[in-house]
Length: 140
Image 1 (cartoon, one colour):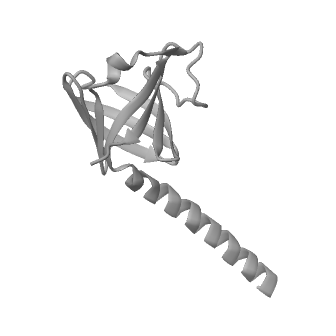
Image 2 (cartoon, helix red, strand yellow):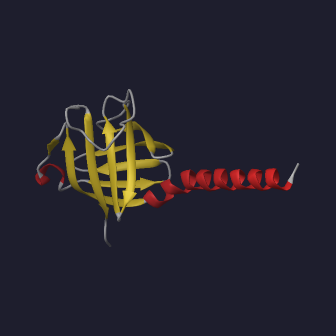
């Protein structure tokens, strides 16, 4: 192999390693307790009273939503996408797909409550089965 081809191969390998490492480590940064600060479904903002007592707890590949009842399940990550599987509580047996981002200390999750495809954007307008929740990390 020529030197240029070896360097190109090394560069491509480094890019693949960095992108793979990001995909594997990003979910770790989601671990902890999160408090919702806004929620929108089908383009309509929900009043704060609806979610003021909710808390999302993420640990490894599990989630727990504490509200008036408890909802628990598994989360599988693929890049900026999530597959959410309800195991206990109101969502037991359900599968949701979601898109997420972590920016400026806020976690934004756009769920497709039908679970038949991933959201393309963080917009629920005209999509009654799409739900967005914006969370802030719980301060201790």
